[in-house]
Image (cartoon, rainbow, N blue to C red; front, side, top):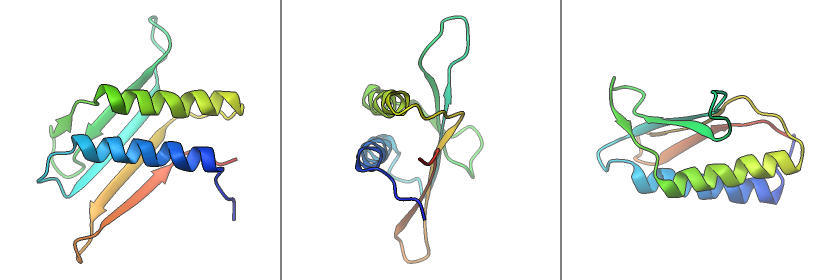
Length: 107
């Protein structure tokens, strides 16, 4: 099994912390999709924060979340790791605990 470098784990934790800082209290699930911006304005990321079970339930990404994502993207560039889409998802299980799933490129 591939072990994530400590830098990536720290950056993922920072992103997850920022996600929880902006989630509405009543949400029991979320999905955050991050894609590179490929438009004419160049650079940056498109960040979508939504409730996966409720259409139209979106939250705007905070500046702190965007900064944390920018740090991860910069780190990927520094280690020459390509990425197309990053996904952070979570839901509350039957016992009331949050369960998280992160999809990102591995080393």
